[in-house]
Length: 559
Image: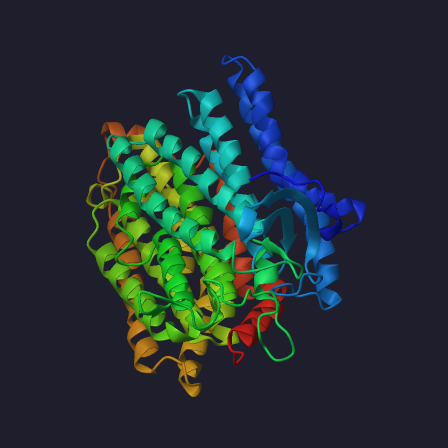
């Protein structure tokens, strides 16, 4: 196997406007910051924190000021991405690896990053959450330099997962997320941090192995339109006017009709990759790593885990499972819908029984991410739009919820719900932000989650109108999770915030002070976004709805 320079004539570099290189800059800026941090002495803790803050702020400013306007211009021109290589915004593509595999042919791997409606909101979410997480980590005192270096590495890995459109590049970023999270939980977490970190690592590693197996088969199943094999995900989705995949190699392992152990190879590949990403979502019964990871992780890492990392699972299902193996989406629609419904109800019921506030929020995430699966299973534009919007909305609400849990834990190092009462009297401003986060999370009209949940149910109830749709009984059962969600949030609020302050005169009386300036800086923007995107959801929806409609059309094509 070697990199061949003699085959460059097969690869035509794509030219871009100069500003589009900013996507790479946003992607790799944290790595540059990490190098500068490595050069600073360990004693310069404040400088390291400021560097991390400036890095995250520059990323978000660059995205909002240049990348997002460029994306909107591309959108106005009808560029919806998905399976059209020339219809992505801010695309950057360069030759990376060209390997001669002997009799198996040649394999080309590209550095290919770009934006469309499936990933643009995920990148925006990642940048918002990372900036807030850096502020949340300001009170980290143990090994500050190592902590923020790992945080910067995680920053690049998360964004890379969303913007990479070459499967090999995606896999590198996917694996790269695993290492910093393992150490951030294992070294800076709670009493059972080693157990939680190991469980997170092993679960995610199993999923990674599944993805690697499918990637190995894909490497020999698609070409770039010439005689060179490719892992370019867009090339894998290109179709002709007849709906057939243009670049699929006849007789390959993932050609239509190929079987493995008597089972359709493409359907098997869909199922394997779906399981891998379902671990990341996570979906019941593959969720058991999540509560442990959340409970033991420091606040800033819980914010990132819930706000961004779980979204990689949902995004991967849409981009890779639905994109590369679309017939699997229709074949397994009922299975996916049932899993989503089970996650919604099971997560809510278990959340009702939790005594630890952080565990309650963790299980509520399992429930609310079940909505995304139900929306995807509907195979309706409304449902999948709701799923994509729910990924974004849940990222904001869960980030705020974990920050609020961190506020009381930082003061008294306790999260047991029953030990708190009358906090509205003691911490009125904190109590106000908690009720906003609770109302948003349970999907109250006027808040962001209401819109995404409404779209999910609208798509799910419409789904029975086509052959592979969900029976009405599935969303009808799933609706009950809304009631359960209201029960555990409102009951928790009644216990902790109403009544007489129970710790008057104790040590907690002095420690339970209201919000600090740093906490206001984190919570106020999130509260504004929860309300803004509930009142004006089109601000986010218009970024993704065109691409989602194109994805649905592609998945439902007859082949």
